[in-house]
Amino acid sequence: MIEVGEAREFVLETLHALAPVELTLAEALGCVAAERVVASEPVPGFPNSSMDGYALRAQDTSAGSVRLRVTGTVLAGQVAHGSVHSGEAMRIMTGAAIPDGADAVCMIEETTVDPDAVTVQIHPVISPGQFVRHPGDDVAVGQTLLESGREVSGLQIGVLASQGLASVTVHPRPRVGVLSTGDELVGPGDELAYGQIRDVNRPMLLALLRQSGFTPVDLGIARDNEGEIIQHLQRGVDECDAVVATGGVSVGDVDFVKTMLAQVCSGRARWMQVAMRPGKPFAFGTADPRGVPIFGLPGNPVSTRVSFEMFVRPALRRLAGHQVLERPIVNMVLDCDMTRRRDGKLHLVHVIVHTSDDGRHHVVSASRQGSHLLSAVADANALALIPDGEGLRTGDLARVMILHSDSSY
Ligand code: AMP
Ligand code: MG
Image (cartoon, rainbow, N blue to C red):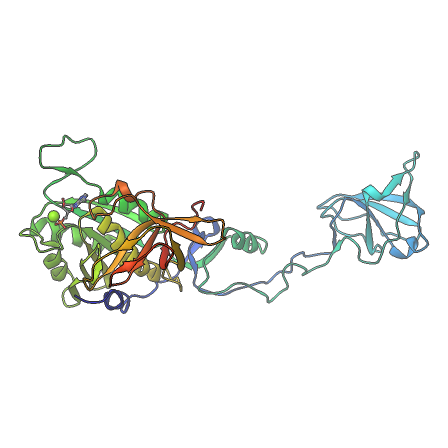
């Protein structure tokens, strides 16, 4: 057996971010910037009002309440006719350019329009610059808007749009082929003969990939037959940036995926027994000429899920250009015993996280654990990492890998 860290190192050491492409802002959401973006336009581009009110000369209000002559109205998008002289004001709407001569705005709530509508009563003393938004307040020319290596968020798309940008250079989302293998597998809607099972891993992985921001590609089901497995893997290598196959990596008579993977990955492939439970058998290789990574995960669905989290997701995040590859790992309080026996392995226990009255995160184990018991762990939102030994007790702190940071705990 090899340690989890060694297996992960073998996976990650040859992988690099995919070559940058230019994507529209909408397509780039969640991708990683491949270049620094620097502002070429100031935002705002001109002095404008942050209130609906009256543009005026602050000095005119220095003695308190004053009556000013209204010489016009400026709406957002318009340019004022003429300028504001002493004793004058212009009605102005939020976002409209401050007229020449004016240096401040009085909000409409602090004014009274005279019945003749020709003059307005300004009640407070206004200081120069009040309610005026200045050019470059938000973005100055030359300012970095997006660092290379940063994930493009919805707010960053807003900032880029404020520059008039329609696209951005990012690492593309990896296209990831998903292949299930096994003579016993049956697709949805098909009749289930005795001894057959439904294909669970393929729909699950296609969904997990999408959840993590990658583009899933369905490579179907291959029977436990060398030729069929090779053909499906090769199609994945040709069409995708990475391939994830499940089943056929253990020590059974027809576990051909591990050997076929090695054949497709001529040279750099390894079949491993990783010191973790579930998810011990694992195969990985990279296929020439593009060095496409191929993952061979164990067939039991819970093992598939755990191996996906431990090896596949970090590797795909590297292809996608992310700098942080791992899920966050946080110390949390155990609300139940997690005893185990010494077996040289790291145990990964599906847990449910909640926030307790003590302000700390606590975890309880999902109802039942077993590599074939998927429904029992489907509500879990984290994995407790229980190191080799006798296990942990209620009240102990455990290291917990958070899988769904968006769940409501
Ligand atoms: P294997 O690694 O091929 O020996 O498979 C281990 C276990 O996982 C067996 O019980 C398989 O029937 C099961 N299994 C393999 N592939 C899938 C799949 N795609 N969906 C659900 N169970 C699977
Ligand atoms: Mg099998």
